Length: 133
Image 1 (cartoon, rainbow, N blue to C red):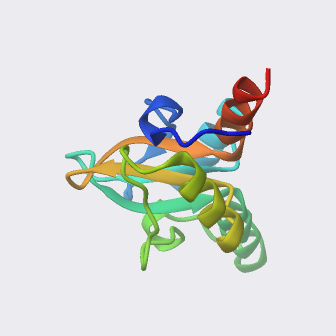
Image 2 (spheres, rainbow, N blue to C red):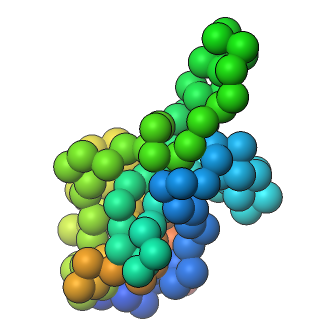
């Protein structure tokens, strides 16, 4: 059975990230190169300001094809309202359950407003596997 542990022990400490003024094409490169489903969007101080998923990028790319225009900037397509974040001292079981309840694959981890990491389903699966050995 999984024991309650702190999220800090399982988060990705250097998650892929982009800035709001980056092009969506650059964000797509980061997503593809890192083989991930989305990126955190941070400002110049590393404060989390949004999340951009591969679906957001696909929406931007298809819109530009349809309109015969440039793809645009991350700020135009990122989710920025009501971001759900975790704190590094939260219980990993609680975070995992909340991710399941909200059907989310990743959760940014923020401390004092700054992005310090991210937890994904993969990290949660690794934690469960370690406790079941």
